[in-house]
Image 1 (tube, protein in one colour):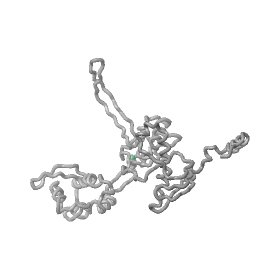
Image 2 (tube, helix red, strand yellow):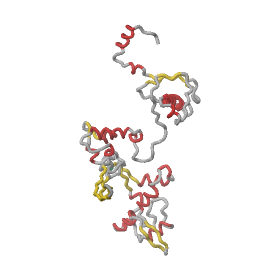
Image 3 (spheres, helix red, strand yellow):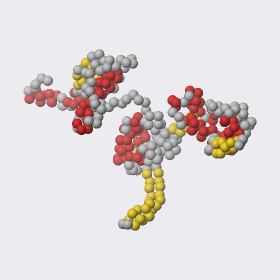
Image 4 (spheres, helix red, strand yellow):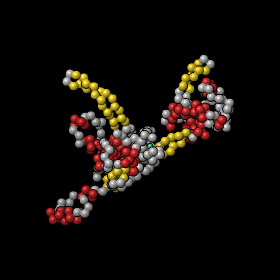
Length: 331
Ligand SMILES: [Zn+2]
């Protein structure tokens, strides 16, 4: 740096008064990066802009971004911890690069996919949503409780009963009420959508069970399921369109019941609970192709009408800051 006279320094301060000196480091400079297959890469990356790094597989995008820039930033952060703490950290080495300037703290978001849980969102994975909940619990009106009152994965619960408290050397029985205010929409259990079965994809109403009315993969009437349906007392010859409400209920929604068939004890369960357990509990990617296609046809997702897809109950949505509720901020 060129040495400045005092006057020149003042002049410089005055001219740069409009742009803060901290804002003048507007690029992240990489010179001579040689990590992995990089061959002496020199680039200036503008800050406060979205910069996309593209290239064919193996061209060194990750070596530049993760292996060089993020690695050095991490190493510098780790250096600020005491030697004692550093002893517990994985060793980091300086990346192969001639110069890195304008480096700030890096937040590396890896390329792994989001968890399969439908309750995960960008907000929950990055923890930004936790801060939003805190904000709404502190300054939102009306005040309804702590951050968990805005959590769409916490249900409101209430309990009451007797507990025993030690008073002096006497155990004393007392009545206590317990309630916890969660933000979960009770209708969709915080999913924001409800799933329903498209019945016409489950069976052909014009046919009877014996005539192959069921369209569910693997439900052949020649085998196990045929015996189960017979054992449960379903009419195998009547077209399903002719079933009474009770018969249809037995076919579709029955809870697990014990039935006897040719001396054997069997468990019968309606089609829908059975499909929920056998097919929907699995990860979509783990399904066989024909099962996945069936599930895609048979299950229809619709936004939850109780919460309009916001996942939150009425109480949580009644709290606003400047007229905006947390669901609107998060969407
Ligand atoms: Zn809902």
